[in-house]
Amino acid sequence: VFMLTFLAVLGCASLVNKNQENDEKIQAAFTAESTVSRVESQLNKYLAESNLMKRMLESGYEVTEEEFDILSALMQDENHVIEAHELAKDGIVNRIYPLEGNEEAVGLNMLEHPDRKKEANLAKTSGQYTIAGPFPLVQGGNGALLFDPVYVKDEAGEDTFWGFSILVLNWDHFMEEVETYKLEDTSYQYLIWKNGTEPGEKLTIAQSEKFSFKDTLEVACDVPNDTWYFEIEPKAGWVPQSQIAFGILIAALVSGVLTVGYWQYEMQRY
Image (cartoon, rainbow, N blue to C red; front, top):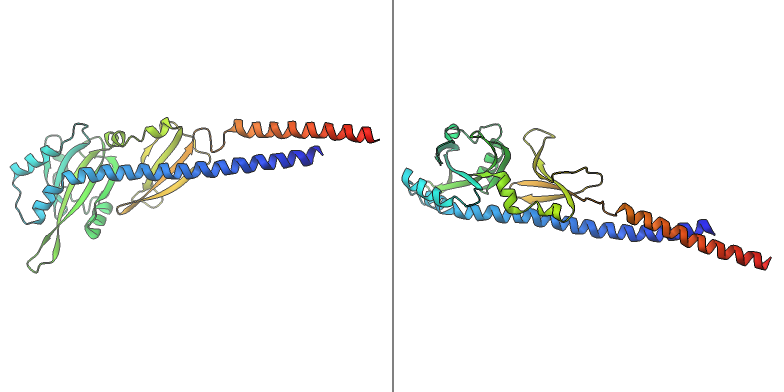
């Protein structure tokens, strides 16, 4: 009687725990996807700021150095997310604002650079913006490059590749603006990564300060020209250990009470 009752109650508790785990994973998947959506929305905001420059180039207008500096200065934000704005005609960086501190980036061929060529060529062929990084920048610090391809009309009226309008983002400031830290406030530990340039290489995009993953949920999130993988898990686990222990205790107590009652009934009958 004890064993049958114990297993029955334990099975019910396990079923409740399993349903709770499924609900938690649905919530975690939604949290991961909404976080990546916030990242995309924020990136689109910065792209909109540089859109005027892109439209001017696509219309065939020759942007002077002074005009480039003025328009780029207007893009600078108070949170210092945009570190620099670059133009790369034919994929080769030829203009940078601010130039001071960024001189080493002048002349870089983004279509051939080992750490940039994958995303640069994807942006060129797809016509969509692409994020490269985060990685150490030539001009110092960690950041990411936002490649926005520019196309102009040739004599035959066909779109031809002109180059890139590139935003250099301070990645730490950007992730603070997206408020990924709030995931930890809601008791999640997480790791966001994407495939690197080398086979099997994982490039970390963001992660919680402390994590020891045991049973993470991996959510694949599509971003323009790439896929980000979001590994997420509640700090206390999908089902808290205290809840599992409580279920075992209840099963033991119920089984004990029923066993004593059954034993007394049998003794009385005997």
